[in-house]
Length: 529
Image (cartoon, rainbow, N blue to C red; front, side, top):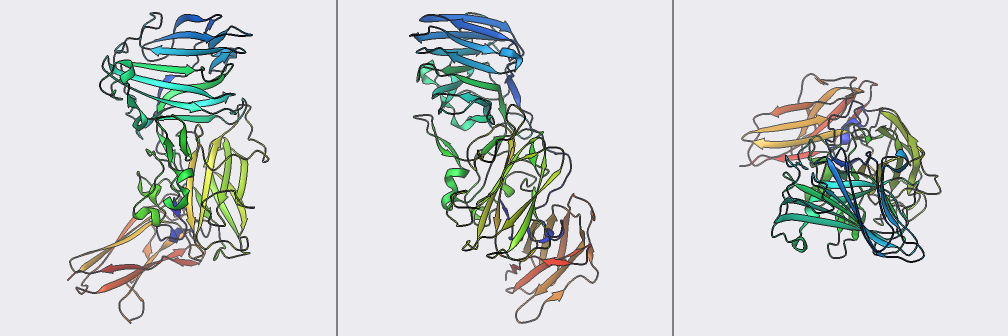
């Protein structure tokens, strides 16, 4: 989460469109997900069973091992008798598990290089598949959920050998309607457990996978239907709202007894074509805890570079107090739907009071597209504000949902990004990526990094010690290295001959091309005795 008023941000807001809240370099995304596709469901196949019993089918397909081996087992019939597993029906590139009225069934797909009637070969994929290695590293097996009318189970098994295999599953709730924005079903590698029920004594090694099994279990509810797309391993982006109350919409937790989602944190499997700002990184979960929890930078410091970089506070801007008006600018790339929230009452919930949803399902498209959000601080707002911005994929018909059907601040969606921010009532501009200082002997070494220098001329370094006034240390302005450019740079300044046992205060003055300037908060550095 970016802290809008912490000095990691402070200075470049005025630099970027005046008071940029964050940085938003408008360059091509440097980190692209290199997901490993298990099945894009583009090779047509239908297997049906019309009575209690099992039917099998196998086709050559663009999948690990080259064969998709399908079994459909019907366990209950009634007014209808048929269950089917349909791949690429109508040419839409999806998998559908359909059950007739009163019908219960289990559909299983083996990816093991064999067509052998559903019998699995634990080492049939040769060479073995590496589901992890990419940049950024893949952290989960994921797929897009297009519809789920009744509660059902989805399960993934992974084998390295006959005695080394792991599984994870999800209980899907009902009500994910066909035509809605596709959800993201996420099986994190860390959630997989050794599958003793399959005869394994050790877990699978995800960098060396010899067989994969996907199971759609419709025995929870007769007539349950589910439709999914693109089974793959991929990196995942999470949020970083703080632990104090926001855990339920930040952390993603699955109860491994019931396999239902118990903490519904925001998450997006990474798509290189849909993101906020200029960079995106992957995490294993929502980032909370430690010092970064209090200064609101947990996702900023996790992964390189800092990917909380897509939201600006435009100039002219001042303190966020009751009744004041402001404009936030969000930079996006790709075709999606943008939504945003601010927790005005500090209840650790987004959208529980009026006006907390500041943008709902806004259609965006194109590269480095700017969307301005007008904001008026309502009466009675808390001093420390938290904001969330989410970019979602579009609905299958290419549209965004109506504003009467707002997309939520929590939950998992296939592709896009979530960025979280901390806003205080400071009038200081906000956009330095970092500003830090460290004493080494009798020297104080200052470092700062910018995220963008669109409106930046340069910097002045100021120092204060004891009762003395502030003193500018550099005789000439420290010139910006990338003036007028959306990319930033790194800077160093050494203040020598400092006295042991003394504490020195430092601040940066950022000089803008429009003649204005802004300041960081004061940094304190103590020189050891």
